[in-house]
Length: 400
Image (tube, rainbow, N blue to C red; front, side, top):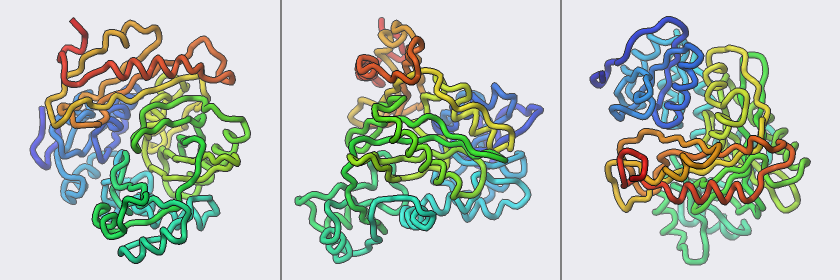
């Protein structure tokens, strides 16, 4: 069943009840984890039959900034949280009778890259050098000041959108127009690899998962390698930095901390997400308690679960291979299903759009020592499997 704009759907259950603003793939995987814990989930999402609803979560069909719908959801749940930065912190601050985690103040800071960097620097955490820009003259001054410049929209950018790596072909006026609003200019960090650390902040303590190495192409995450192919000192510094980041914010929940590793072995924070993170999907197969289970535990104030790395693992995103919006139909998965240990996750999105994240594949190296690391052949295997999956083919998902 599906509700109208301000209604709810689904069956009532006993036990704790978590409301989540956003019902995409993160809400979907959080809902699966919640149901295993006996926790009911209701998501608020404007898309009827959103990915979370497809796996049994109740759904409120409404815009993220619909005050009446958010208030109605808050009245029916034990705790309110969010899996998307499009949630409205001002609106969440009006929720007084239901706890909201992470705190709306955390969302407000992180939503705006200007305030996020200001907050991190005030906490003594290293970020790229940066400055706020509003005009072409501001940008020209930043490009004179910095050795290489990245222009970022202050709000709303993700997966390469709202980010421009400026080279000599970019005119300052055109770049400001292309970014479409308030922005910051950051100095390019000459990194050797991109890392991230998923952290969980519970009622009494924080934990971090093992750092991952993230492989991006054109600003979009393609593969994740755990443990990262770097030395132990860098791993320890990444964990320490991420822990400081998480402790600097208010409220319980999951945080994804994106990092740069420089040639000198230093760690610089790129961005922070106050929610489950794409680079942490490997935790479903390779950690005792996944980021999604810990997300639910943390916002409820329950004890959080172990975050140790059980075995090396690689993950590859499945990106829609279509030229325009089209009904999603998965195909090419027979090789994935035939690969020992490979795990296919399809997010159940009804429409494929160019480059849209439609699912992921994880391959854990079950027989390997976590301290040994990932064989490059395992990374090539998951990369090849991902390349063979299509989202405009046979709707059954299995090749015929």
